[in-house]
Length: 265
Image (cartoon, rainbow, N blue to C red; front, side, top):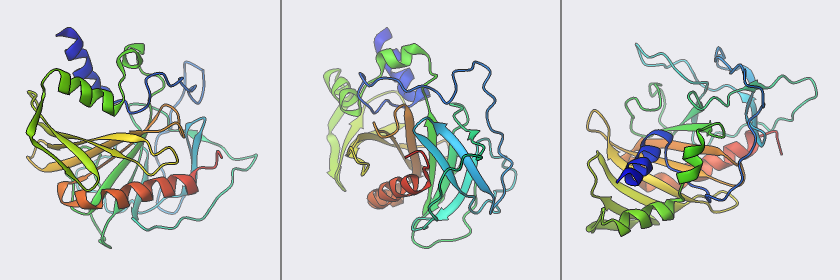
């Protein structure tokens, strides 16, 4: 039972592990113990250079940050809100560029994408209210997590197999849709479904998608992907259930933007 509690705790707090558990750990941006992380004071139109890991450094112009919801203080470095088909200009890393570290696990870099040509959707934090046609994305370096996380870390398929072997899946309510395998989970939590799918990164990485109700009973979709392309970096995105049919469009454009923004080729 303690083992079960550890696994559930890893999924709830550290968010699910989605790469091979034998994957070697990449080094943090700095091996110094007194890293000073970036405090976001950027404004729309600023050029920023944000280092997430040794394999991923983003250099681009900050997008829309003007429509922040009343009473909300953004807690993470926020790159801005962009239309889903936004086409950024390709940048290069110059010798005199100063890279700001945004590799703090507790405060990952974030940006939003907007579907269906919508505009002026309010901006808030990742786990706040989700608005329809708004996708919240965060990029998180987890290389400094406690070793217990890496010891018990599972791939998405291993997690589903574990739940199956312990009879936590209700097959009568499970389904396949939009190239997703969705399993109804019988646990004492608000999570309704865990789904397996494949990202459009070069490794076609398998991911775990969770469909659940938030604190306001809104059904939301949260997807976490880890890829050998960026070791020990988690790419997560969150949107309303009404946009589930658009998950491939969301996934493809996240990888497209990261490829263009990344100056650590």
